[in-house]
Length: 273
View 1 (cartoon, rainbow, N blue to C red):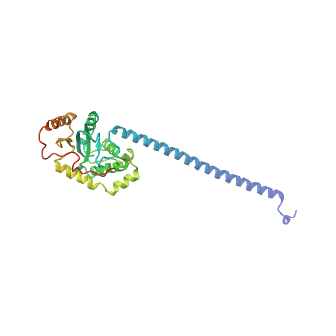
View 2: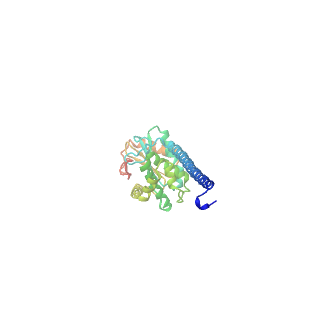
View 3: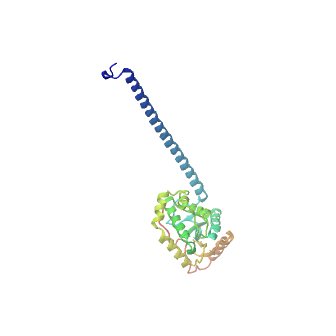
């Protein structure tokens, strides 16, 4: 046979079959790759959804114990309990203070048992020997309050006390705590890095010193009907605060002291959120 006259039919058919097989193989390989990518994407979506639901559930669980806090601040004040309460526990506190941690549940319990007659107001008083963690915590709490509201602010203080090693050692991941009480992490990080609450924290420290606070916790029990106040120093038991309330009631019959001020007067506060 003269091979110059053309390619044998069998060779053409053979090559065709080879190319077809290769094409099918490539097609199957691409389909397999696309299929795996699709499955991987779907799995990632499901995992992300599960994680989101987990975080949402955790946020709800962390906020629930602080249900008496208004969702937003009132005139920039962080208040737990009724804004119209007869008495206010104005606490100057440090998030890195062990005694503050010990006290934390006491005013909360008093407010919850007082049926609207007592509320609790937080003011920052980070001690220098607990810095930078204490001041960072104070500013972080304000950022949480700005982003996620007053209830989240209170939940953040509770979570900080739970997770911090105390005495200036701080927490491992501030952003994680913020997220677990409802603050969007990117917005929180931007707020904290901006330093926008440095002056507020500084002013609250100065006010505490002006009022006679020398250590933490320092809690003024304030009669909102007269403006009289009594300072309860340290992590005292509930009875100490109730005795202060009783004494303030008796003082109503006397002329208010010149030192007296209502809880809401001249106290440095943040912007209403």
